[in-house]
Each structure stands twice: as structure tokens, then as C-alpha cells.
Image (cartoon, rainbow, N blue to C red; front, side, top):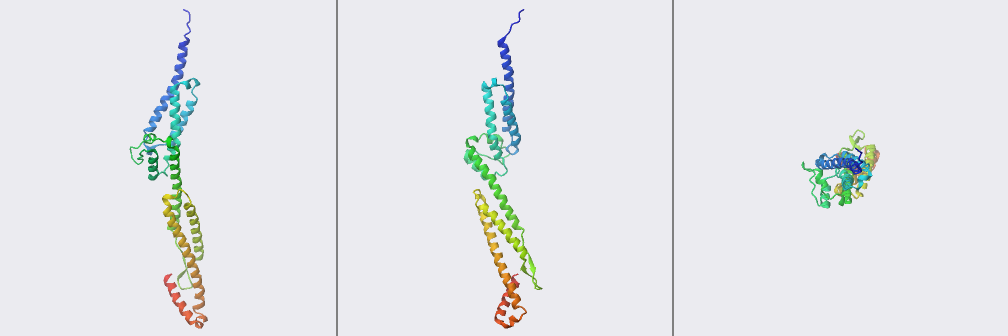
Length: 273
């Protein structure tokens, strides 16, 4: 029998082989993306998903050119690209800096409800929201969350620094601990100035709204404390000078009224200290 060349069958066989490659990847992508949607939001591993989506993109790009005319290829590419475009937003939304106030703002922007603390809140609940349509607003909210977290950490550090800081007193002659230690005071005032500089930068930060009252409170506390300590040191230095003049010296006999007046001040100083 003569060999018949079935050109059409060869063409179909070649086409089926190509389509097998396409639909193999198509099914893999669709199953994976559907699987992502069934992951609990609190258990989502964005890095893992990112890597898998990038791998799918590379495989899609390497498919033969002949397949790129098929609608299935277009559907496949769109599914990958859409999810890939959402991944940076998901990564930002998964940041631990996101608080309830930020999720409420996201709800206002997307007109969707995000019960992220629920044990039945899945990635699907996020993906059903119009993320890409509100991309810029979502990015702004997520960025503000990170900036606010930074402000919160710096403010907490300032508060922590001063919650354990004590003033040190030193002995004056044999009369007891009546003096602030000059070296410690200089260091304390310097640290206060450093903290006030930090608070000043936080006050000028446009993301400070949730912490503005606390920042203002601590600016007032540290400013007042600095003024008090500086005035305290002025009074202390005057007292040391006058104590040398009026206690146990000839000048006290020459100026009895002034000596008596200083005596009352001296008793008050000792009592206060």
C-alpha cells in the first residue's frame, strides 16, 4: 500500500502537543490561584506566593509563539498578571504595622468589609475587593501605617528612656546629700535636649496624627524639666556661695540681719533637699 501523508493529522497532532503545554500550565495556574484564595489571611505567605507567580510568568513567557493567538493563553496571562499586580498591595497590607484604624480606612476606600481578626477571614475576602481600582489610595494608607509605626517606636523609646532616669545627689561637707551632682545634671540636660530634638522631628512629621497629643505632652514635660533643673542649678550655686559666706565666718557677725535671713533660707534648702 502506498504511504499516505496525512498533513492535516500531523498539523492537529502538533497543535494538540502545543495545547497540552498551554493547558497544563493553565490548570496549574488556575488551581494555584484558587488555592491562594483559600488561605487564611493570618497564614498568608506573600513571599512564597510572589515567587510562585514569578515562576508562572516565566513559564508563560516561554510558551511557543503559536499559542499566543489562543484565547486560553490570553486568559492565562491575564490571570497571572492581575494577581502579580495585586501582590505588592497584599504585601503592604500584610505588614504588622497595619492597625484597626488603617483597615477601617481601607474599608471606606474599597466599600468592602475586612474582618482581619476573624478566624474565617481568607485571602479571597481581600481579593474580592477592588484593590487595583484603588491602588494609589491603598498604597497611601499602607505607607502611612509604616510611617506611624516608626513614629510610635521612637516615641516609646523616648518615654522608656525617661521612665528609668533618676537624678543623683551628692554630699555637701558633712551636712548630707544636699546637692545635685553637676556631672549627672549636665548629662541629663544633654539627653533631654536630644530627646526634645527627636520629639521636634516627630511633631513636624505629617504622619503623627495618632500620637500628636502624646508627643506634645512629652515636649512639655521635658521642656519644663529642663527649665526647672537649670533654675535649680542656678539656685544651688548661689546657695553654695552664700553658705560659704554666712556659715561659720566673720561676715555673719558683720551682717547679722543678712545672716539671719540666710539662716532661714538655709533651713528651707536643707528641708527641701
